[in-house]
Image (cartoon, rainbow, N blue to C red; front, top):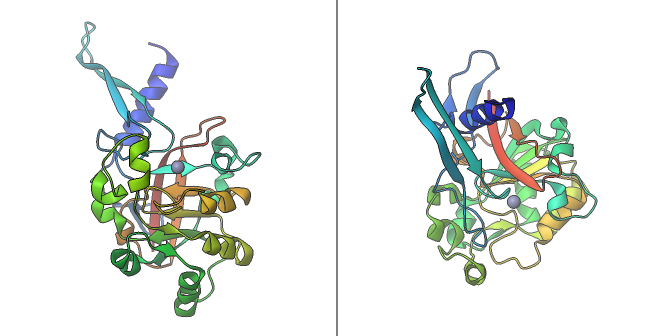
Length: 266
Ligand SMILES: [Zn+2]
């Protein structure tokens, strides 16, 4: 049994270790909230990705040598479930997954809640005025903030029809996609007015479902800002005063990848 194999086994147990959103904690200053969906056969991928997350059992049970042993192999597209979009995903010459500084993945979190507007209009796009209203209520967006957009879409996971607007697979699904996102003008406002480390959303894409040009992706990628998609359980977060720790799989040359993201709440 070689070393890579053992590393893979540990990696899988890490990814699968927790389905409960909240963990007790006695060494960090606060409660830890898991913002990550488990990877399994229900994990939502973009409709053009037909395979999803595949976990292949290699062994489960007692070996001939007498010890118990379980191991799997997994196969997944980079962009499914709770995941990272590295800047290279939408902008030539920008950072690949392994190049994103850890400092940009750990920082002060804030929640911008547009769930009421998204409930009224499932194609709602977050406006600059939503960020301005946040600032009126809570003060300036902190320097180096990690912004989490709460649309309320987590309530639909893993129902593809409700979450994406369609449960079709393949190119036919694309015109039927329907979910909220970030308006490109608001993305431009953010990068012009704030030094944001990263931005996350509780939908399948930072651009809304009807987007054809993915302009918000492009604007954020241009500025080397990592994006987190399908962020889970954001309804458990306060509006501010928490820390985000977002550690994606370190895929060399990756355009993104599976992400373990947690919040530490005071
Ligand atoms: Zn993605």
